[in-house]
Image (cartoon, rainbow, N blue to C red):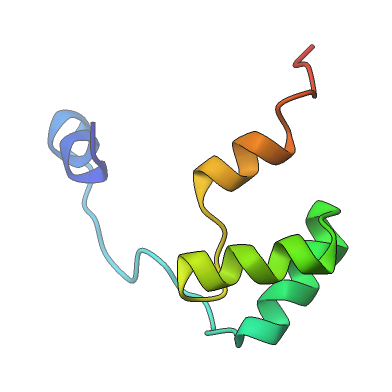
Length: 71
C-alpha cells in the first residue's frame, strides 16, 4: 500500500514535499550511526560504503537489533 493508495481511499489531498531533509556527508552519516544507533565506527564505515551514501540498509539495522525483543 502506498501513500497514493491511502490518498485515493480516504480522499485526502497530497501536497508538499514527501521528504524534506538535508544531505549528509559520509563522515556525518558515520558519526550519526555511531552516536544514535550505537554502532562502532568501523562497521558504520563499512555500511555507508556498501550503501554508497550516508545511509544504512534495512538488513544492517535488522542485524544490529536482532537480539532486542519487542515487548
